[in-house]
Image 1: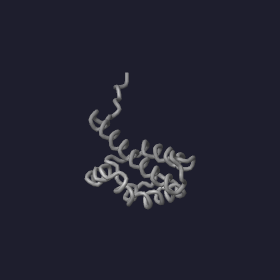
Image 2: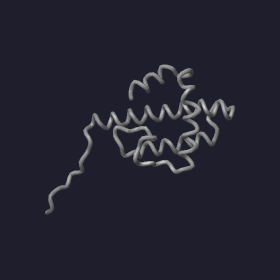
Image 3: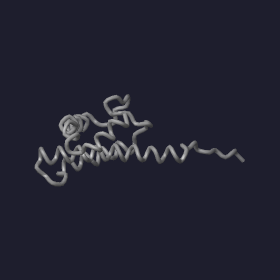
Image 4: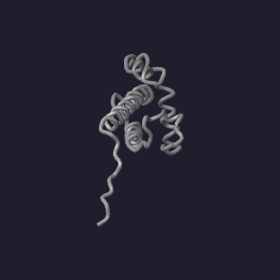
Length: 114
């Protein structure tokens, strides 16, 4: 009988930490998309295009192979397709400076984490 092969697993506390990091990153993207969509598209809720971009970003974050997750700009693996990479870059360029005024505590927490 062949020996049992065990799959290497990350310790439980690392898995929880990854989930928290990914959730925080996703929350940041969601807030930035909210600012962008409200100002550019005049929608109180995310419009279909911004909702689609949020879904895409969520799927990409869930599959991120890096831990701790680097910023996408500094990542060696670009997992966004070129079109969506350009779209999310536009959202971040627009929303980044406005995050400080609209979500100051969240922005401070984000910068302290770096």
